[in-house]
Amino acid sequence: MKRPEASIAIQVLPKHASGDEALRIVDKVIAYLKSTGLKTVVGPFETVIEGDLGILMDIAKECQLICVREGAESLLTYMKIAYNPNSGTLSIDEKISKHI
Image 1 (cartoon, rainbow, N blue to C red):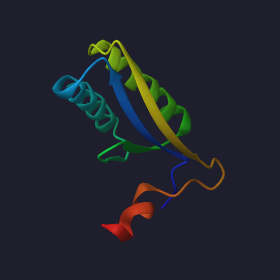
Image 2 (cartoon, one colour):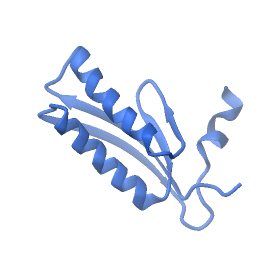
Image 3 (cartoon, rainbow, N blue to C red):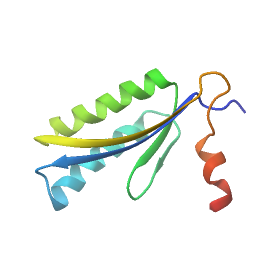
Image 4 (cartoon, rainbow, N blue to C red):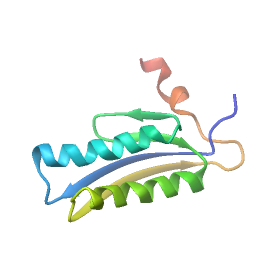
């Protein structure tokens, strides 16, 4: 199996939204990430998605725009990026399969 070129872990934190409103906005972002058709794993603090780096960067940008469209005045986004254009990076499954 070919390894993905990149993976990103993304956490969005809508500012000035609290409780249920913040969760509603985050849920919209997670729904979008899952709708991309790319391998996606939702965790308690971040969601990980893997694929082509350019596509992932476009997806990360859209996550910002979703938050604003959904009412966030501003947001903080934390991302971790693993990138290996030559031989690919470890897949999500390779990273976690022995732990589940």
